[in-house]
Length: 390
Image 1 (cartoon, rainbow, N blue to C red):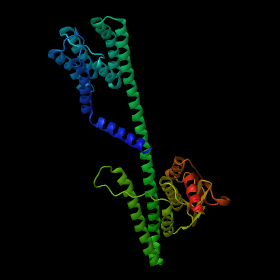
Image 2 (cartoon, rainbow, N blue to C red; image 1 turned 180 degrees about the vertical axis):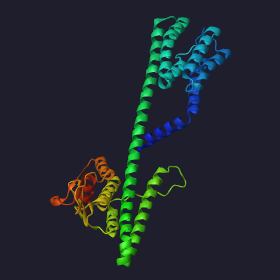
Image 3 (cartoon, helix red, strand yellow; image 1 turned 90 degrees about the horizontal axis):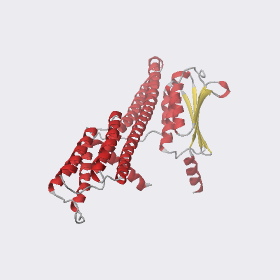
Image 4 (cartoon, rainbow, N blue to C red; image 1 turned 90 degrees about the vertical axis):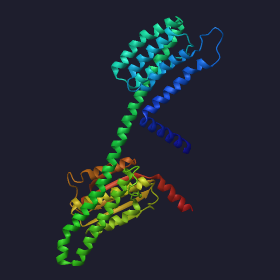
């Protein structure tokens, strides 16, 4: 698996380099074709074969030179190759080539990169040029069939290349859209939670200043702590985005279930009595799953603070049979039409990303509001059993 990963990474780096240096790639292809057409001039030939002269070799090189511009003017390059090849056939006597290398490269390029009208013009041009070339050479049906086959193959492979590149672009765009959605969820969760707690604390501050100054001091400290935590988490996310920037913020791990107690404490400091319980030895979650559980609990508590008007809330994590159940309840006003907005949508998306489900509705006995999330986490079951056997 490690070797496959290294090979895949090397391929990706090669594709990236080729995309960033198209002229170098074209020059390299031209040199490779030049090496191929040079072979008949240097290998021993049977007696009576065409002489390998310098003028013939120079003219053959002239048929290869247009390939350097194959991306910028593919149809023009094909026309130049056909003209110089005809000149080579008619003006000099030199070794022939086992394959029309330059023409095949030009046709492949047109099929892969050129617009539809140039592709259609190329097909029409080949229908005329290939039979004429065969007539000037051997005038055999075998050569005609072979030439038509190799040019058709070059064209088909070019179209397949275009289809593959289109599919890669679509997948890249989809991956970028998924990444934008993920970042939007992360920033929404961080900012929504922090701002909600800070608003609650700020609204309670003036009352606390008059009635209980010590509570006002605690409220301001909670606002400061919440703001610092939000800034730290945003720096982590922005640090991931600043690839290759030497001034990038240091990256740190995303919060997971180990950070939920601190999250609960911050919410308690805002005046909401939150009870946090765990069952079934919930621990050793995969990093991505642990981060999602933290965000789910964070968003659920944010909704309680913003919408519920609750006095108490409960967070319960229970693990059994390879399934983690996350439940967040409150004693507030109950289900609110349209409440939660993007937050509860993000909860459902996070659960679905890990193969789980998320439901919302009335709390126990029809009172309050409840968020219920089920996540399959077979890895935690294995680690718990191993620890028990140890």
